Length: 467
Ligand SMILES: Nc1ncnc2c1ncn2[C@@H]1O[C@H](COP(=O)(O)OP(=O)(O)O)[C@@H](O)[C@H]1O
Ligand SMILES: [Mg+2]
Image 1 (cartoon, rainbow, N blue to C red):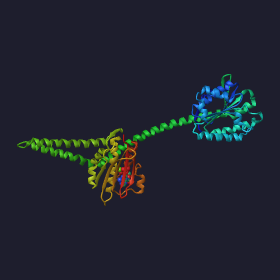
Image 2: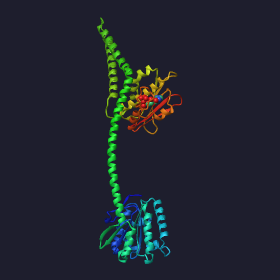
Image 3: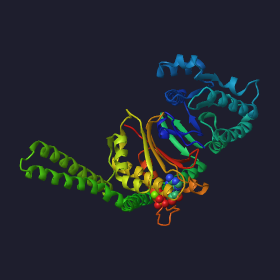
């Protein structure tokens, strides 16, 4: 059931009526009737609805049209579009002079189908009942009652108008019974009478809404607490994983740092020798000292990279060049790569757009992928150990980074589960690496997946977002 509220244009209804409303208006004078219906139709036209005004005496189609035109200047256009129709009650209700509730109900369904096929927001109808003969009253009440079912699930609102003068108490009771609520307009004043059924329904809806609101508040609080805890846990795990990965890497890193330091010392000794010579060679000493500084800076670089990777820092949004970030990670893992007899190849595309995101976090992803690949390949003794790291522009935006190895590949279980937290096939493994990779990549709006390559081996690929 659609619960969208529609403006009735009639102030007393609080200006709102839900689709599916079937309500009635008792009036005394033609002016009171015109006043109400013009507001009703005007507000429907302003809301892209289809409006049908079924007019009965003492009002004529001409009077209704003229009065509405005074309130809606572009009425002619709406009439020409058949968006607004003003028809006579006798034509609508009494097609061959007799009242037939069944035929009429079918006519409503047909009208609704045609109106919704034309794409209107809904259908707003008003009809008067002065044409009704006493003998048809009972049938008409049955028909009004049945209308509640027709209207119930449709984008349809129906306002039935009854002249108070000709309604006796039994008729008024019938009308009240068959409508959701009742308006009365007397001497320019409005009364609204809610029927018992409507009151009950409203109270029920209010209760349900309150309960729902309460539940939404509770649930939101719970979710906020949970997601905070989750984020905290993830940051901690990411840190733990990074530290563990770094521990695995420490031999490699030691090698990485030892090399420039050894070179620095050797260079400094050489420079000293040139300066201490009988005839000091300043030219060569200067060059050697220049190299010494370079090596020293390399050491600082390496240490800074390690420090950055080990830091627990909130994620950043940098614009950075991915190939450089990858080469740094390869440099950090070189010792591990060499030790395991792996040969590395890179195919890094030129002119890639800058990546948008946390450089260190994304380096951590690549680090994990490389270490996994090296570990997978070390587990088999036969065959070449080849690692291929590539970047390319991804067709639908972003950069595709792929890490391919010639290792044992993935069995169906690993293929299905490798991104699961704590899934590991390694004796000392933690099984958090790829799970963290996925959450980092997805937090960046990217995607990461594994594929089984044509030969042996595995490819892990991710798409990273660009600015
Ligand atoms: N390149 C790869 N080749 C084969 N298996 C892999 C590869 N990368 C990951 N896996 C599988 O996925 C599992 C989960 O990896 P990961 O989440 O990094 O945890 P861990 O490395 O601690 O086991 C690994 O234990 C391994 O079974
Ligand atoms: Mg791992």
